Image 1 (cartoon, rainbow, N blue to C red):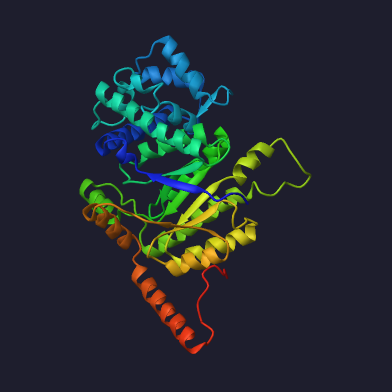
Image 2: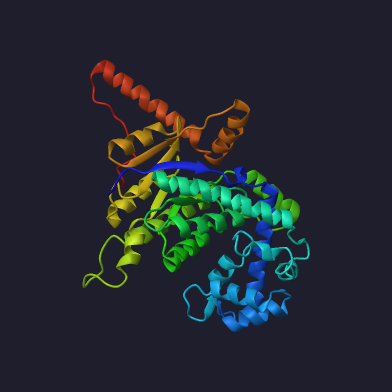
Length: 393
């Protein structure tokens, strides 16, 4: 266990323009295509020479000094081989070290991958660098104050840029604890794969993984856009699929954490530092779904994760308060999210939450029934009959 975590939340759209995040996400997608084309053996890795020759062949206009510095930064583990993660995490306009290359030197590379892309302009690159610096200052302050910063998820067409900023901040600040948490929307078909890839990143780069998991908030908008633009619907096919995926994502993160809690047979090994980082993984289970809460509590018990061991539960104030109360009474870390501000700005957020939690009204009816039972019990002195969401099956 440990001290209770204090949280703050931020939206990347408050630091940078949504249109610029979308443009950047398109560039990142084009660079993924570039790696796939370079990886002619489909091995998932390239030698440093294959990277250099491939980049030049695709039109990258880098000096020998620039190319050498870029490849040196890519080869993080110094093994002479560059995998997809190293390639994409280094060759990015979101890194101030490589951002200036994206207006001209790198632009032929990503423009060839997507005919609909225009090269990033110098002003856009400067805006990206300023955005990263602004959010980095907030992250540094959170680290200084002992607060964990949750970076909210947005629509899929700007999420890749947000993911990369969040993961870069994790590499900087999540050395001793989970200062930065990225948010994963589990109604997205690719969410489990992304969580697995980012946990692998945490092991590779040596940082503590932090995540907030939600179901999702932009279903209607995402499906409409996919239909209009002719690309596959990114949303799970039905609500039950979303529920299953949410629970699977939670279970995967919990297993990652649990793998660091218990020493392997034979005692200490050279992997003790890596196990220590896994044990410090921080998970915010943000849900109003009782079944998901029960499943998470049950897994925590079976995996030996303490109630105060870095797994938190979050609900909106006024929603599923009986679940929050039960969890709190049983010693789990529970947080109530209180949105505030002008009504015209808060209401759209609350309406999205209501849409996201379609079973909320049923839960409200259940909670109302429980309140009446409690009132009757107090009036008649009969023992109350109240459910216990914290008691897992």
